[in-house]
Image (cartoon, rainbow, N blue to C red; front, side):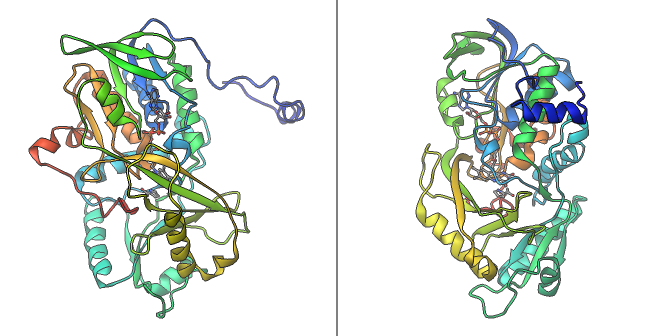
Length: 416
Ligand code: FAD
Ligand code: PYC
């Protein structure tokens, strides 16, 4: 590991970082790999990292059609939490949170984890009852969760409006104190650097255009840089999972939708926890730069465009100003969108497929950033052993035929 003195850091800053070593190599792809991972987002990179680090499988390529983290990994609003309802989800999201808690050390790369707490507001009697049930279920799984009164919310978030005169007054909230945010790019870069150091080839600007099969088994992929043979292929392409499944000759129960987010101009520190409201459809946190990071639910139409529609922005601005009247004078700086793959039960797919040696990790919808290390960890095991890790097994494709769905629409916290 290269170390820098304060002087070499200053020299690099003043000389335009010309001698800065690359954090990972940019190799041309080899003709053949033991494992090819399609998609260089956080989940694909984490999968490659854990294949090498935990299973000793390093003859691996990650093929990314654009740049690392340029998909949803670099577009999300960085919220991390594990307050899910069902045991199966609690297990994988809590594993992810625990891995996040040690990730800067594991990767020797600062992912800027900030466990500032995630607050989910309740605005009516139904919300309150549902929240109480949910908090009991979460605590039953050994995960931290507590209920706050409006006075306690006001103490934690002084800028919030807890007046009874609101359209949807705040009646209470659940709080996961271990929840928070992490720097999304750093998560992708840390896993990329760690995977590269263990021998994984990371190939950017390499689009997979076909999946080769023989006798029901995967044999490789077609790419914009030519064919690559592979013993196993893991597909981790949020937003495009149905497209890749089509290349392999089967269909997924997935809908693709735009999900937007936006930031305000930077202001002095005012909000030091994440606030989410499923009822009025908005969530907000404050970034280290001082911007308010704001989002809401998906755009309801299907689309592969990485942009959304105006009325979604307008609706969440209305909700934000109701919750925080003091924000009404802020200017919005920019907005963007990603494409999220949603399953009928709002839970992901981590699974073997009808094609031997081909595995899919997708369907994380609006909430997969928080799962990144856990998803990569369980998916690497599934690929390495050719059998689902116990954390991944409930999220197999066959649940859509057996009916063992894991309905997490309530925990999604962002309507979809
Ligand atoms: P991605 O990062 O999208 O990576 C997939 C990669 O596959 C892309 O880089 C893409 O270019 C590549 N690819 C696609 N097709 C091909 C091909 N044919 N060949 C090669 N490469 C290909 N989750 C949370 O937990 N908390 C949040 O606060 C949160 N906020 C969000 C806000 C927004 C606006 C959005 C859009 C999403 C949000 N999410 C959030 C969801 C989260 O971002 C995703 O679930 C997660 O990042 C998915 O990671 P991934 O690695 O699977 O996908
Ligand atoms: O899953 O916590 C979440 C989330 C927040 C914003 C988008 N998704």
